[in-house]
Image (cartoon, rainbow, N blue to C red; front, side, top):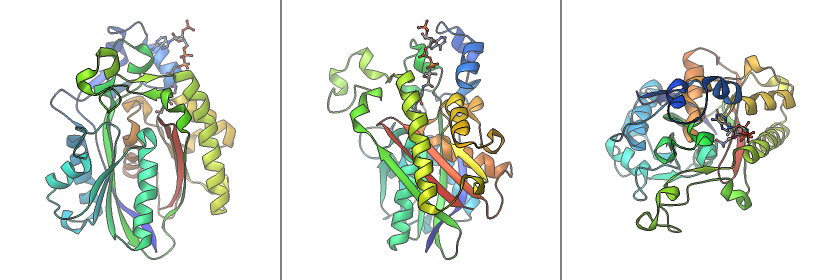
Length: 323
Ligand code: UT7
């Protein structure tokens, strides 16, 4: 039994934050941001929009494209590091809003690697026979926790949601394997100090509300980690890099993607990139890119797709899908 992706969906908020606008907020330039990150603009939620709103619309679209009614879903997993609130889970809020009743729903937090972790979890539930049809959402609203006075982070992140419907299927198509990793000794590389049990929101001061990132250190570990995960996964699946039809990587920085392509001797033309439009949308970046790749007909029947992500935790991983 395999878990097959039978529908994709995506949703980004309407608010566009361009590099030109950022030039008015911090000491930076469009030229610096484009050349160092590949980002031209990103989307930003308004005060009245939360993660579950984006997740809801992305999920609705994935369900429609899959041709699956909400009452046919057996489990909802929401990969997010930016839930609507500490409790309940954003997955429960979305499950209720979609009209799904009496099915389990939970959040999973692996930050930017959330979709890869979620895919592995959904696949395990389906393969075990516990659930047949799973809705997996990757959503983040990192801009809510971004300090727009910190030029090293505010230029990178954007908001968005992507979703897939997975279903048990016989045959050779579906998720072929995943490799997941974490290094918790580097938890401080990317973190938001306040709002949890260490510094509860009532005790937090302004610096605690925002994300802090050791960008340069993260960059170096990211390239190494992604390469390690991909090589281990291909070895496990007995597949060569030449067999991969498309790579859909986490969109963190175009230079990370280019460095990875060089290390793997893989052509950039076969790597899907949309970082210019959305920046780094954390757990949403791979499912949004997947949805756009499908819509643009960059993915054909029987294609081998490689997903790879890296993020706070530190976490990283890769998964292989036969379409
Ligand atoms: O989502 C997964 C996890 N996150 C990541 O994967 C992020 C990985 N890291 C990165 O993408 C990059 O490290 C950044 C884009 C964050 C920064 O780029 P960098 O090339 O690593 O720059 P840097 O931090 O080494 O800084 C180089 C210079 C510094 O100036 P000095 O000290 O050399 O004079 C910075 O102050 O660039 C300066 N700088 C900027 N200049 C203009 C940093 N940010 C900016 C900016 N505009 N926005």
